[in-house]
Length: 462
Image (cartoon, helix red, strand yellow):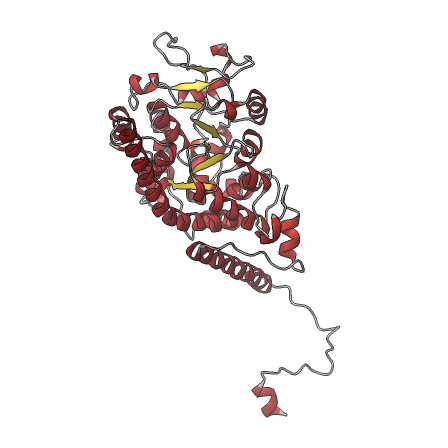
């Protein structure tokens, strides 16, 4: 009756119209509603996952995996090289479980590997550790011009000593990072030491593995952009590694990459054709750098797809084996890295000078500051701003690889498309920020223990 229909909001269909013959609506509004519901369900699922992840940090517990009856478990079972470790059902990949030192068990025996995430402060870190006088393993070590690239042993050398030619840096983007400029002095440049391997390519990593780079203990820190492959091949259960990594907000990183590679002629990935397209067009049709963090951690190629299972795996690896830093808190992040590396950046005069040089007026955060200032420009002024940025690009190139450009506002079409296609990285980044706060106490405790041990060793010698 009418009362019942009104109570339960029932709509009667005329007799002459059956369910099979009733025309189907295909309006834009209906399609839009369907997509909105789809993404709403995705957002709810991701929110639940993030909540569980944050709780696991706060309570210091492992995040249990779903039942084998779920599609998520099936997804995890297909992750590259994934295996479950004992009855704990840990999501750690074999390279992390067998080759990397647990964060709670930090000690001097592990070799540090700095994961260089593009446009996230890696260049600054390289220069800083040059200044400290550490021996680095990265691409420059295997440059043929130094004559050590085909040696069948690990050799430490100074590429920038006083006898080096002034033209050593011509045409080489990695050497360019260490070249003298208005923003770096010759003394810090002359401190640089390298081993004769290239840890930025898979071929170079395999050569470093064959020559016994890590067992030789000749490299103080290894730089690589392929954290999965490098950790899997350079370390083992007898020679474990510790991962250091600086992270940047994923959308900010992609926007910075888009503008930077338009003018960075010295980079192997220089893309002058991007100048002729808008950020929105690039994000929709060109960018293949999506969910970069998750893909690299679980060992997938950029063209491969990742899902919630991969995110859980990546989260577990980062939580258990990474010392994380944030580009937005660069100086504090470096201080923590220095503690892990055993670097005295306060009492040692040279190291203190390096910190003052890099975190005085020369700071990587200036890039973020410049982006914020540029973002104050109105949309109508953006074209003018970009032209001015292009003119200043070469002048800014040596300044910690920074490049001023407009910042994309959250909620804009550019932001939305990048957020949709990098949603797993955004969740992982939020998790990393929480982990960064938690690790502060642990790192400070480790620093105190090292200081006490050093005092005891001095007293014992006396």
